[in-house]
Amino acid sequence: MAQEDQDQIMIKNLRSDVEGACLLLSYAAQSGLELEIDTATVITKSKELLATGKLTGDEEAKFYFAYEALAKLASPVTVAGLSAATEANQTVNRYWVYPFFIWLAILLIVQIYWVIGSTATTAIKESRDEITKVTMELGALKERLQSEKKALKNSETDKLETQIRNLRNKKFTYYSILDRWNLIPKVTDPDKKEDEKDKGVETLAMANFVLIALQGYVLPLLYGLLGAYIYVLRMLSNEIRNLTYTGKSYIRYKVRVVLGTLSGLAVTWFFQPGAEILKSLSPLALAFLAGYSVEILFAVMDKFVGAFSGKTPTQEKAQ
Image: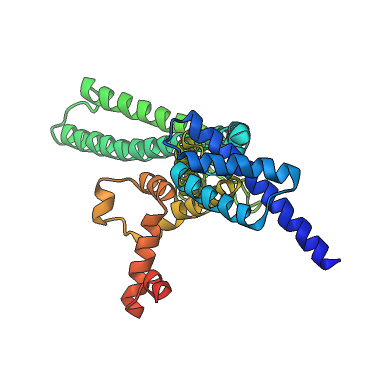
């Protein structure tokens, strides 16, 4: 019984190989490849003999020699790629293109959210510094007027006071924006009477926590994912055009997306803020680049490991 099952499996594999060879033969003819007449004859004859059950061992051997020659001629196109060509576009759209636009929309939402918080926080700090500066100018002006025994009110002091009011209104506006922007819920102390100054400090502190989390963790992950997705889509377009996309490509690219996403986060750990590379690249651009080319992170890690062991993981694997 086991021998019969084994024979059935061998016949099934042979039939699959013959069908694949015919598919590859059709592609080679349509593509204008220079086929050997003997190669085409052996493959078509093998299909006929297999259908009638007259394919002998010698004929089978000739078939596989012809199949090998045809595969080399059609390379890098494979039978698996030709078989998957009809479903490749649907698969790519379902698992890669549509998710890409979803993640891109999420990235844009998070990026815009971060920009709003960062702009408001920066504007509040600049307004506070400007208020302090103008207040000191107003105080110095009043001291000078008092020493000269002049009126403490004139057009110049009115101008400075108006400027201070405008700056305070601007600061209050951005505090209101930041208060609604904050994700962290407020925890009030029932024993403490909260004044406007304490409320502003708390709002600014919470905003800084959110901005640090977004810039240090969330955005690098999303930019790494974006870079990985763009790399995958670029490679997929080449594979579809060259008819080399197979089911294994999907698995390989899934791993690539995971590695690219993690690389976007991890690559910033290996560079200090004052590093030479960061003078021309922002941390988020570096995360995108790491997601697109995970080899950057692997090269840094190999260099780090090699500094202690004397050998990189690639060298150890080669041995």
